[in-house]
Amino acid sequence: MARVNTDDAMNVLAELSIFPMDKGDSLAPYVARAVTIIQQSGLAYTFGPMSTVIEGRWDQVMDVVGRCQADLAADCDRILVYLRLDCRRGREDAIGSKVRSVEAELAGT
Image (cartoon, rainbow, N blue to C red; front, top):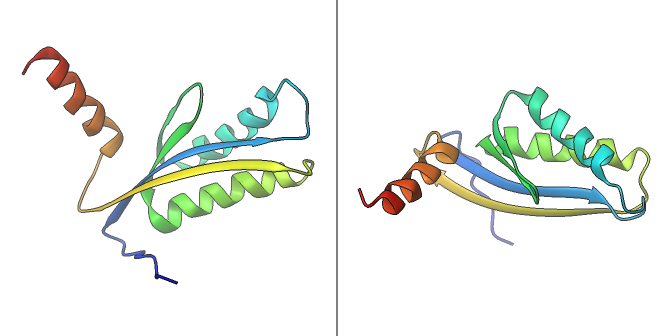
């Protein structure tokens, strides 16, 4: 199995969707619990209708993802986690810079 590079200089963008599969149709209270953990982490994040993007170092991001899962596991029997990662050395403010880059293209600059 390949080893994941957890170098402190590696910036990680994580797209996280996490929710229980055993709690009916209204999952907002559970999603809100996870988003609260993300907010309290102090990491940069963007909340969206289908996922939340978190930015930080590998260990920081994985710690937050683990805390979200552990929180839901306290009263949920089945949890679905979608996690997509973009790891890049030497990058800062990836959430903002990626959006600005596309907006510049849309504006024709």
